Structure formats: C-alpha cells, structure tokens
Length: 617
Image 1 (tube, rainbow, N blue to C red):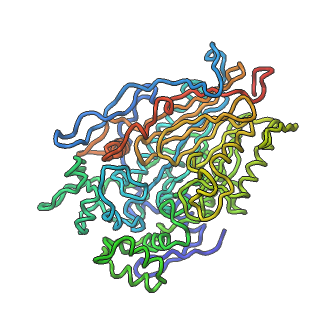
Image 2 (image 1 turned 60 degrees about the horizontal axis):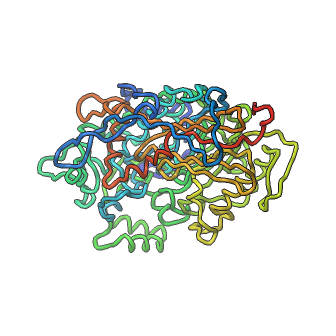
Image 3 (image 1 turned 90 degrees about the vertical axis):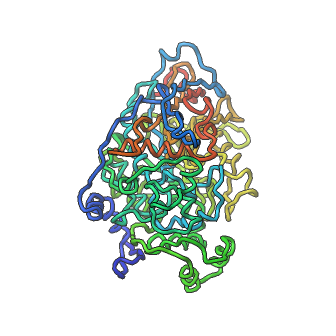
C-alpha cells in the first residue's frame, strides 16, 4: 500500500514521484478542493445549480427531440414528451389481482452505470487517430470522439441530484436504501477521472480537468491538420476565414461560445444522500476499455497521458496499420523516434492523468468514505489483500448483493470470469441459499438462512462469449454465456442480475431448467451516451407467492434549460450534454432507449422461500 510509483511528465523539467497513497490523498481526501483551488486560482468559481430537473421519473414525462434548430440541418432541440407507462412482464410468474394493495417494499435502490467521466483534453485519448476513421452516419465505438465528452462530470452530478430528489421507490414509496454503480467509472483510466467520480459521489468540488489553465485539446481552435479539425466539434465559433467543422456544417451542431472555459470549472457536487457502492468495468481495467496491459496500445496511452506532447497526425504517408505495426515492433528508443516524427502541439503535462492500478482504485475508496459511506464503498480488506474487485454486501434486511468483476485483465472488452471467481461465487450462493440444484438438476438442501440475492456486474450475459472457443480473450474464461446463466439458475434465491456495458436499456428473463421460476436481468443505459438515464429498482413482496421487481428510468435534467449563449448553470450544461448526444449522426434512438418492455417495468418472479406465512422478512 505504500510502495512508490513514478508519474512521468514535464513540470518545469522535473520528474515528480508520488506514493500511491500520497497521490490519491492529494487529489481526494479533503485535498481535492485544495488541488482544484490551486489549479483554478480560488475555491471556484463554481457554477450555480440553475433550473432543477423536471418531473420525478419517466413515468411522468420523458425527453424527446423537438424542433429543428435550423431548417437547413437535422439537429433538433430537446423538448418534453409523454411519460412512459409501467409495463408488467409475466415471463417468469403470473401476477395476482389485488397485489398493489397487499405488497410490501423490501428494498429500493438506485442503479448508475457507465459514467465514463472523461478528461477531454488528455493527450492519452490519442485524438490524432480520429481523422483516419471515416466520418460516417454510424454510432462509433466508445474510444472515438463524442461532442459531449466535456460534460461528463456535470451529467454525473445532475444524475446524483436527480436520484436524491426522487429519494424513494416510485411504487413502494420506500426510501432509497443505497445507490450502486456497475463500472466504467473512468473513461480513460486516469487517476484524475476516478477521483472526479469519487468527489461527485461524496459531494466535493470535482473536475476531471486538473492540468490547470485554459482547455488545451482537440476541441479548441489551436492549429490542427484539416482532417482532424473537421472531425471534431468545436463549441466556440470558428476564427474568421475558417470553415466550420463537419459537425456544424453537415449536421447543424451549434456554436456555444465560452463552453470550453465554462466546462472545465470545478463542479460543487451535491453528493449521494445515501450509501453508494461501485464495481469495476473494462474502462477501469484497461486503457481505452480493451488494450492489453502489455500491449503497444497501452504503453502509448500511458506515455502520452502524463506528457506535454499531444500528437496531431501520423508521420506523412504512414497508415494506421503501419503505425501500430511499428509501435508493436519498437523498443523505447524506436518509440521515441516514431513519436518525435509526428506533428504535435505542446500542452501542459499532468502527472494526475497517470493510469491507476486496481489496488489504487480500491484504496481511494477506503480513503474517502464520504458522508454516507460505507468504508470502501463495498470493497473489503480481503479485496485489498488479494487485489480482487468482487464482494458481497447487505442491501436490506433479507437481501444480499453480490458484485462481480467481469472484466478481462488480458485485453478484451467482453465479459470474463476466471475459475477462482466462479468458485468464490458458488461458495457465496451456497451460503445464502437453503435450496439449490446441481448442474444435472439434483436438489441440494442445507440449514442455511435464506437471503434474496441480487447479482451486480459491469457486463451483461450477452457480453460473455457464446462459447469458450469463441472467446476473444487471450485466456480461456472457464465460463461462457450459457455457463453463467446456468450457474445463477441453480439458485432460486437469485432473483435479479443488474448490469451495464451495452449503453442501452434492455431486460431479459432467464427461466430455470431445474425449478418453476428463474431470475431477471436488467441492463441500464450509459451516462455518456444517449439516453443518459439511470434507474430506481424496487423489490416488493406481493404476499401471494410472488415478488415484483420494479425498474423505473430517470432523466437527469430539464430539457428546456439548454443555453447556447448567456449565463450557464450545472443544470443547463448537463442538459446540453444530452442534446449533443441525442443528435448523434445516424443514432438509432430506439435501440438505445429500448422497447417499452425494457424501460419502466414490473417484473414478476416466484418467491423462492417464505411462502408459508406469505412473508420474507
């Protein structure tokens, strides 16, 4: 825990050393505000909150695209639409009449996922590569440019504020017991990005912009090759004589003067009003979410992130394929020569952009419990000792959560679990279930005290390989899509699996082969991409041999608060992020927000125990 880590970069030509704990404490543990103050010249200035978000949930009202901003382009302003009704799904159990009068709320929690807080000016984003991908009417991978990348801290703060305002399960009325995030917290795995997430959740001043001074990056109007310049949306108006970028010229994205200067100001975050827990996503594990730790890709990202050089293009005549080949074949000296041959701009270096390790990720949580905790935000001393990122936690009386780590440490964006974690999961489930089944359907019984079990992970079942042979991991995961579903289906006490990663809303039923019932899988959309939603999730005992799992979507902002000119607020910037994301060229809105059966849903499931007295607790 106290080993010294070296963070490169050029701060006045000196090399700065940080111990793991020193770096994390410097940036978070009460010193976060000091750090921001030293960079920005004061404890602020902080943006005002502005207009609060509208109706409580999407049951009341939703956000839709409204009028065209200009008749010459497809870009539309945001407006409000009708609420989305609750849909009852009886794939796994049949609802009985009168349950709404009988039922009792057992648990109510908030689900956040894929926060992707971004340091939008980090050289480690390898923005110079964006120009070599065709600007097309398609939804790009998460490693590519997004116009809303500047505003990820604002969106997270707005979503936390909205969760606080809602405060309870819409159907049960039970106050929220906790909030759970299922990973991809830091988009670029930068220490500063992760610390910004912690600060927002704990209600401290937060910013991913830690390099100081004005924004320096691909969205300003400093010189860049024309192919790169036109690929990126520039919020400030173009200098005289400069043609607009493709986002403005072809699609009608607006000028938002002063946005770069405003967006990098620290946010005085509200913080979660209830205990919060978190998990580990592939963007927390791997550079750009998929680069193997020993790969040339990862070495390049780590090197550029803390340095003072931002490459702008490949060497003349070099293709991306040749670039990666040369980088893969290069040693340190040859890599230096390759980077030196690339056109680049000088930027302020920042050691806090250094990629965090898994143990640092966990240590920061222990160092910063925040006002509502818990210590470690789910992680335990065992996680620290074993460098693991999976754990169990009490959610409410009679309900236990199990957070899995489904990231592939060898370099793949897909779902992955090694044998040791699979064995650990089986042991935890055995300890929470008096009844279970073998893989062949043989019933097993014990005198264990029963608990309802909710599984959490970053990846959904569909992100696991279809078979071990088809896995994209460089190591066999020992479990595939069918394997993980079958394992969970051996335990009737498992009623729900909650996850993210897909950046969309989706719900799947999983019927067991061994008993009459099964479990539900609920996938929630990302904060960084449309629809930028989260969920409240309730578990209710219907007192008739069934449970209802009620998932309700939340929008974070008032769509009418978007401002291109004049004073801006936290609320208006978060709403602007959603408008920018919703107008993504070629975006299939329905595929991301989901069908009605994936949105506001009541999911019926058999009650696994306690049916004699019609009560679980």
